Structures are given as structure tokens and as C-alpha cells.
Image 1: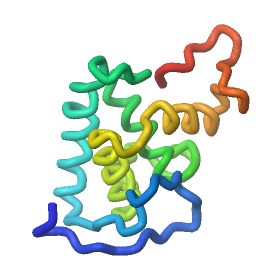
Image 2 (image 1 turned 60 degrees about the vertical axis):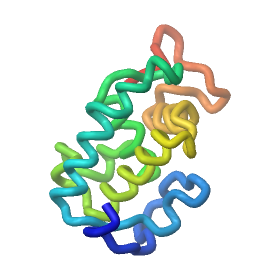
Image 3 (image 1 turned 180 degrees about the horizontal axis):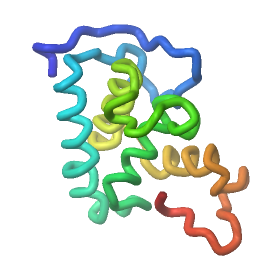
Length: 139
């Protein structure tokens, strides 16, 4: 990505999840490259290592939910019109991709990002326990 990206500081009114060093200078890329990497990460790479790493999610839309929620600091549907990959601002999609890269590299904790996402959606109590009768390990 280095050849087509330039570093830009994050700029958003919301408070996205901070992962040490990951989103301090998120690269902004040509939109088509961002979208291509987004789908590569969430449809192939992350699901491809999910079982091996013991992650709480396995499906592409779960990874997309977690990363987008973390990028905007809330349930993404409260900020971005669906479909998110098409309607998210470049900076938001770049943050989500950067988080996906960090998760893949073992530099960000997917389980804690998932818990934050579920909390924002009212599917997880503050003490980390799920609502009665609800699964808390996926979307």
C-alpha cells in the first residue's frame, strides 16, 4: 500500500477505539484500493485464521461489524448508511482497514474489539456478560 498511500492524521468527531500505534497516522489510499483491501481482510484473511487463533467470530460480516464499529467508536449503522463499504468516508474505511491489519498482525485484540462492539449494540453488559439467551461471540 505504501506506493499509493500517504500518511494523514485521523480526523473524526467521534472517538474511535485506540490501538497503540495503529491509528495515530492512518494511511489514506485510493478508494478502490481501500475497498479491495477491506474485502481481502474481512472475507479471506481474517476468517482464514479465525479458528487457528481461537477468535470468537468466524464470518466476514462479523469482522466487518467489529472493525467498522471500532473505527467510528459506535455501532456503525448509527454513523454510516448501508452498505458501509460504499458509504463510509475514506478516513473511516482507512481506520477500519488499519485495525484489520493490526488484528491480523497480532497487534490488536479482536476479542476486546468484539466486546466493545457488542456493548455499543446493547448485546453485552458492562460486566462482559451477555444478555440472557443471547450469543455474545458473534454478530
